[in-house]
Image (tube, rainbow, N blue to C red):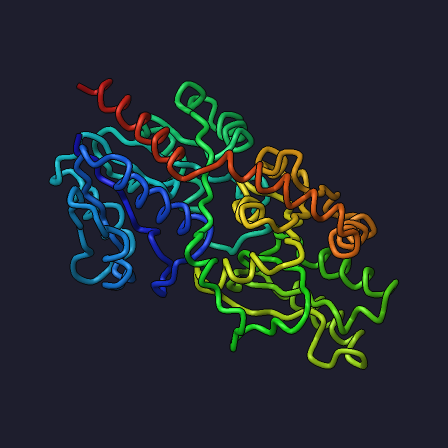
Length: 389
């Protein structure tokens, strides 16, 4: 079988590994190559993917052909006219679009992965200028897809509610997690970039409104108010790229740091910015707990990543988070600062409880692997191909 994959989101616009859809795209594409050596793959790669990244993607795989970007990039023409022509001329048996969208003039059998539909439920959380995508590209992609993969049952439900004609086409295939054991074993205990001189709680992800960081900062402030001596013992470290509409989040960070400047002039909350894949795992493995108080998640991969390295997780029951975390996390109401503060206290100051969370988290994360995700995805691709022959 000849499978064409749209790898537009294999990395972010600056060539970094990225998060969210970028991470999913890289992980599923790489694992598909490894899991299906009998099949032939053609993968379109973005111009921002450098030679090192490309070598890493196809390492050890002789069944992969690369389709690179040609000429200048003219947004609509390149994406929605030129790419479909190139995809058609590659003569695939089936196409896979991991990013939730396919070019408008795509011809042929296609499978699309939908990650979440938060922008339909809460457009106020997102940048302006999304109408073309939400009103045209996504609906057309869902309509034309032969099969739709939803990364969670929560996402499947919203797809079917918003696009009723898709009901017979949607299948849930969860994302996976594979903690890099060799990388963790070789982890440098002396970092020049990150201040590992004390314990910390961690948030990891894009900085954007739905991540609910203002409430998390307030909860950490409340935790310290009851134990001011711990302001020199614990930090709240925030890792990830700045997204959009971050002013309120940044203002709250400044406010909390100002409240504690006499005790901790360097700030009890520290923003680290984007991190590499190695840095991400380094931070995750050392954290006392992951705080992930999101208001909406189609999946919530950082929760599983933290569990896979034995880090306790505080999260909410919003979207797919309870589906992903199972019984292995501490759940809080996203608007309850007191409850969130108590959860932080439990993770940091109740060793026996934290130990049990680590055990439960390991077990839960073991139920999700990229190998399983790839095998289930490949089965869908094979079924679509058979129906078309």
